[in-house]
Amino acid sequence: MNLIAQYADWIYLVAAVLFILTLKGLSSPTGAIAGNRYGMVGMALAVLVTLVIAPSPNFALIVLAMVAGAAVGLYRAKTVPMTQMPETVALMHSLVGLAAVLIALAAVHNGDQHHSTVQRVELFIGCFIGGITFTASVVAWGKLSAKLAAKPLKGGWVKPVQIGLALGMVGFGGHYFITESLTSFWVMTAFSVVLGYFLIAPIGGGDMPVVVSMLNSYSGWAAAGIGFTLNNSVLIIAGSLVGSSGAILSYIMCKAMNRSLMNVIFGGGMGGDEAAGAAGDAVQKAYKSGSADDAAFMMSNADSVVIVPGYGLAVSRAQHALQEYANALTEKGVKVRYAIHPVAGRMPGHMNVLLAEAEVPYEQVQEMEEINSDFSNTDVVLVIGANDVVNPAALKDKQSPIYGMPILEAHKARTVIVVKRSMSAGYAGLDNELFYLDKTMMVFGDAKKVVEDMLKAVAH
Image 1 (cartoon, rainbow, N blue to C red):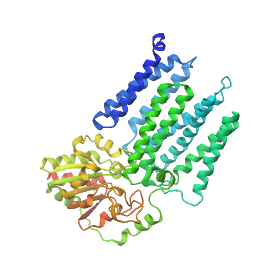
Image 2: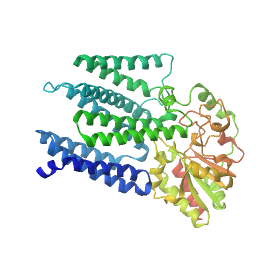
Image 3: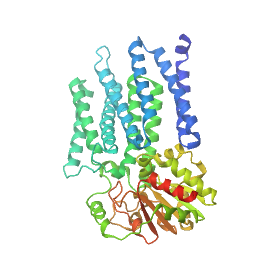
């Protein structure tokens, strides 16, 4: 143990390098497993060193908390379905924020310790970021799990409330900084918690992937704040890595939606009155429909097929059946690829994880920038469970809330097949022009059942 304490800084440095390797590994499906292992080893080293160098730790409480947390984590990891992964991630972000708040409150209530000017700033920043992260993540969890309405909170009063809460938070935080008043710190914390709700409630369902990414960044900065409070270098490094990578990912997601990050955070969500009106007109338009057998016949006689998966694929848990069907098409000489939009699903990388779970070969999965130029040379595009990310309105309808958002240009293919339960609008509340094109055939039903029926048709 003394040896560990003697080389604590060096072990922390090794842990920090492992965390960097974790992020590098997680940037690619092929490196994800190794990345997770690096992270596990790095965290184990960091926890071990912290326990050794901590002054008079209460090992009984620490071990009890670690066992309880590990039990909950293992249970959730084994039981969470892919459809609930986005809200699970949001809920985990909330726990990081709550931890930051509780540690900051414990630190300011430590009567034996005087906090320097720098420490008071660190406590203020760590606590208010943690408070915002906690409530915002809970709201995001509620929206993603359908326990709260996905529609944005609207009204001319929303932005003044946001500004008022932010000013109140800063004001009481400043008073704490000057006077070290515990009451002011508690009031500042309360303002930050309420502000977290009013930052996320006005954001619509269509922006949820960006919100999840943004909250990932928030949780990282909250963790870094905890690190400063505890004077723990590895926690500062790990939190900064998560915070900066989450911010970069949020920027990439916003770019994929042709939105600015400030517009997402403070401008409300996609959809709105115009979107609702467009969705309401869907029943007035004519569309073509067909059966699973029709779809299977068209795809089995094609030279190339591109599959565009969306959240509906996760809901029906059809990824394994879909890959089996793709293999059957490949055996018939059909070139099959998957096209992934950066904001498909409910969180960044949702579709990539889904396809990896079904053991789809990595070389068959292509990002939007890689495959968009090839849609015009594609015989059939199968859109299954996706909606807004293939909506042509984003390219030509200046009145559409998603105008300017880069999409998967499935409408350029020779034939489009769309698998949906109904003609209802997507998560952003918008009608989709793709469904009414002459080249489009709608196949209604549960995605898994439709794919299984197509598989049977191909096998015969």
